[in-house]
Image (cartoon, rainbow, N blue to C red; front, side):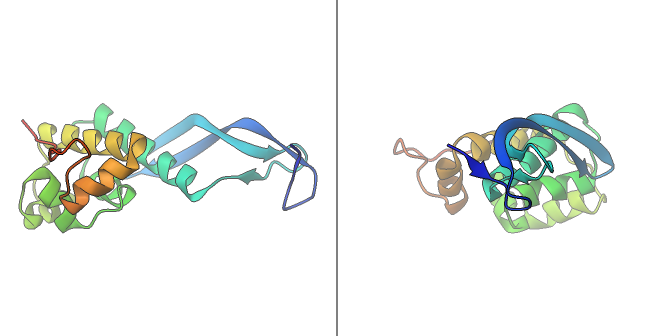
Length: 151
């Protein structure tokens, strides 16, 4: 099926799209996205979900790669997940003030909690319905409550 470009009217085709995202002080280059791209002007057609997945992947990469990621990265990851501090605190079983301390750089986030955030990102990316139920404190689907626990 032909898709006309909304910018110039030329034909759009599915292509790999490279994207650079800044996560805290880190630069993440994402080449994992496919999108309808105009062959003439290069305009890309991305859904909101595509953009959310880019942010989640970027946060995941930095959290996995850097044990010393820092508060800006933790805040970026939380926002990419669409969570308030209180929601993330509940999922990680910590006080909301702890999330604030991590994000403001007053206290370093333990590696176990960083990896728990990576697990949350994985669930949000691969099964958004289960992630939504987790945030609401509902059963994850098997009748059992799914909880991400840090060590």
